[in-house]
Length: 151
Image (tube, rainbow, N blue to C red):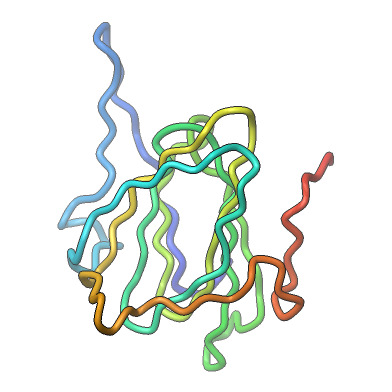
């Protein structure tokens, strides 16, 4: 597991009306502050990768569909420098993932349905100085293969 990457299982409280699941609370151990909340929808088979931040953590919850999230530790001082971790998350694995500063990340929608991700960041987006640095999704510098795997 990548150092500083946290996974919080989401507990669903179900009844006759449906369910409620808390995503993030100010008293959660993984909470580092609120900057902004966003929602994104991505079509099946699409890869959105790679990017990283120097000043903010990302906290992802896939609330519809399924994604294969991948993280690559780019922090030279980290004990897990150069390691890759993946997490399947969404309908069949309801979790919140906190991606720390300096860890490149991305995802691919798996299955036949679009995925909807709600994500929180610990600092607001600054259009004049964006804290978002991109790496091509198929970069040979990151040891990760986005192709479908039949295990």
